[in-house]
Image (cartoon, rainbow, N blue to C red; front, side):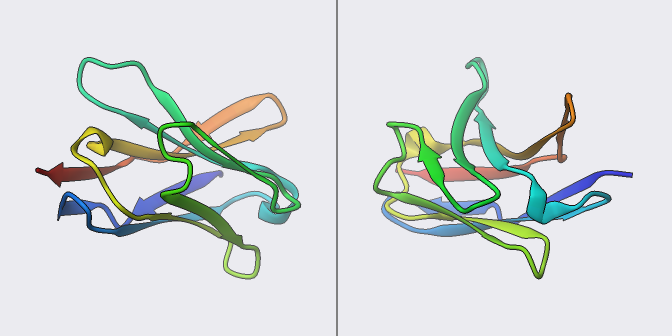
Length: 115
């Protein structure tokens, strides 16, 4: 079955960096786009970044220039490098895959940025 397992979250001071990972299994990873969403308490879920099967990327305006999304098809993993973190980046971050009409996501990893 499809599994997405996020890791790498934690507590960091403003201006710091974190690298999130999402290990995927149960599908042909290299064929599918992957994305990261985040959700803060009381806020709508937000698409943070998206990467195509061909490595094209799209970022939300709120993270553009600070976050970098990449994928390693040999490891079935996507990475979200987050630099210059701000308190408003605090949220639970979810890895997601849309596979043949079904949306899958992991359990999420908490990112907390202190001011």
